[in-house]
Image 1: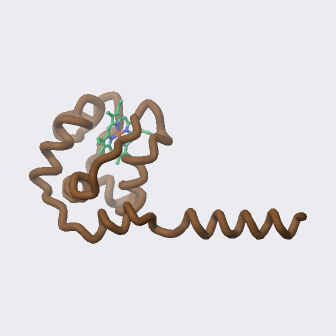
Image 2 (image 1 turned 180 degrees about the vertical axis):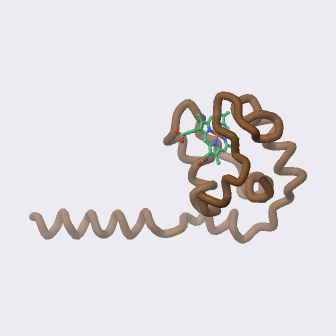
Length: 104
Ligand code: HEC
């Protein structure tokens, strides 16, 4: 039984650690920073400020220095850090946003 549970845990952790098909699609796309900025201003600026300098949410200046592309995508789509909502952007929109976040 214990072995089974350990096995299942190992499997689950291994599975969660795989980049999801969504993430792979996002990373394969060329993001457009200008487009990403516009998307950011519509969806994210209410909390992070028009130029991502922080408001209710933290400033995102230099955020890609402490978060990898993967963790940035997870931050946006996971909804795990309320009050930041869960977003479900299309892979292209996510790629554009990522490109903007990395330019900060
Ligand atoms: C309702 C307010 C709100 C909105 C809207 C929002 N955020 Fe956030 N965001 C937050 C808060 C609060 C945090 C801090 C969460 C924590 O770490 O506990 C955060 C954290 C982040 C972080 C991680 C910052 C770091 O230093 O690690 C990123 C990246 C981010 N947001 C990007 C976005 C993007 C991109 C959007 C738009 C698609 C967005 N946020 C929309 C409130 C918001």
